[in-house]
Amino acid sequence: MSDSPAPEPREPKPALIFDDPLDQQSSDDTDRGWGDRPGTDSAADLKRFLDEKPPHHL
Image: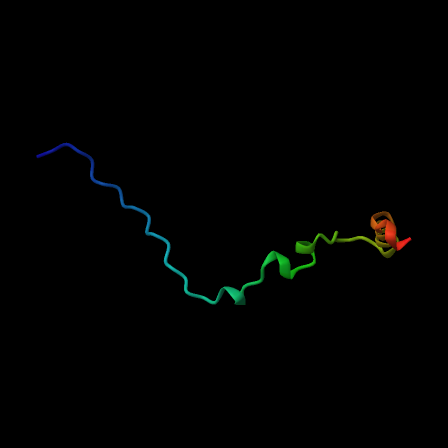
């Protein structure tokens, strides 16, 4: 007769998921994944374009 506590139940291991990973949307599938800033207006977009324009496009 031992006085050791009963073992606590373990959490079940996560199940393996065999879904098609191409069915899920990645961050690259959204505008945010490409660096677009949400909520900007067209004037701000034009200013950003002119600021980031390479020198050979002058």
